[in-house]
Length: 70
Image (cartoon, rainbow, N blue to C red; front, side, top):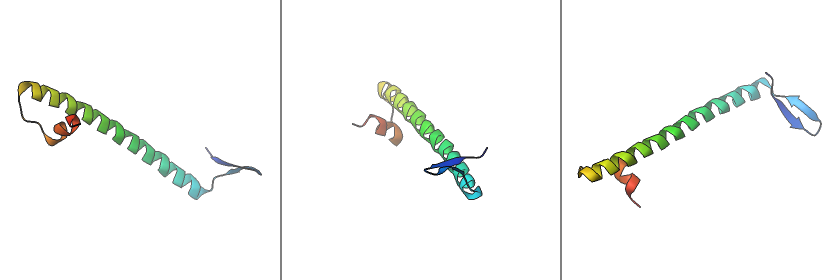
């Protein structure tokens, strides 16, 4: 499907190079969004593990300790 630029003179279609660049930007966005979701999930896991280890009196990993340091 062809994409278009909105210009004062009307819409003009993307060039092939612009289409390729936009496809790459969209693919990178999906990768970045997944990386942010993975990082948030890992932080939640580290926080839960840190709480459980503190209650049990076990040593924390650095990542777990970072989640509870204020």
